[in-house]
Length: 72
Image: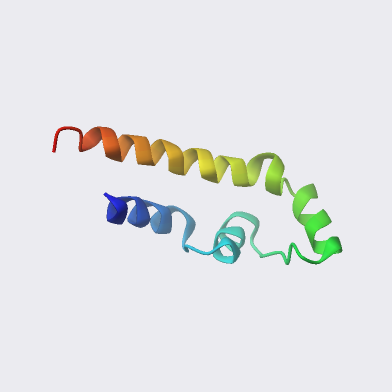
């Protein structure tokens, strides 16, 4: 089941790393330790809608996978 979730994640976001996911979503990555880049990340919707959308999608996939293997 974990392999299926991993495959879906990589298929959708192209990477398992935050940097790689940012590049897929924003077309670039941000150094969120740098105050200016973090501000730019936030203005681009980083924690407002982009990251929550990724987390929500992956949570939904996890439930789908678990429900599909129910009783296995």
